[in-house]
Length: 241
Image (tube, rainbow, N blue to C red; front, side, top):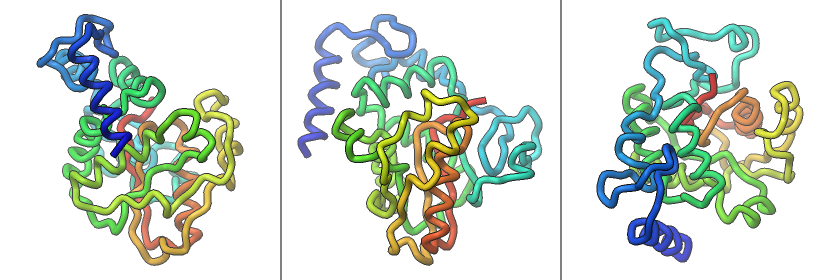
């Protein structure tokens, strides 16, 4: 409740006081806006326009709905599928940066609406629980919130599936994946997650804000499968190209 009130207070302050769009830096209108993004920039968010890899959601210019990228042909992520709404670039990258690092946590609802759209388009909501990619408690204390959990909770309300963040925890406070070379990311998260025995025989939707190399989704999904999950799929707002 206090976190919700704090979020509402910050959003109200941005409405009343002068504020700039987080995407373009221009004047943020009172009404033509989505959270702290102006209507024009929100409408221009770079959605993935065509097919994407079934396992990692890498965008592809073709129209084959069963497309699997080269790396996933040889070593697919341990998920049924991964969905991503947009490309992690331009205005969407700036919106997600504000959501993740600048306490623009009121973006959780609008971003969850984007994720809901791609899930309904896929037509697969056969899950027992939504599980956010966890953040170590030390990092939560430093940042104030886990953006993946805020996104997962907002999505859960929209699609009527319970969000259960305690089904998966992060056991180590690691270096941020974004600060590491692509080749080092898998090793950084290997063995860093622990699933509850309560995931056994359950169908899990794993939720995060961004998928880059897929190393974090791989580590989380592998641990959920190891603990007995019946199936795991993943959904993110954005995928890097």
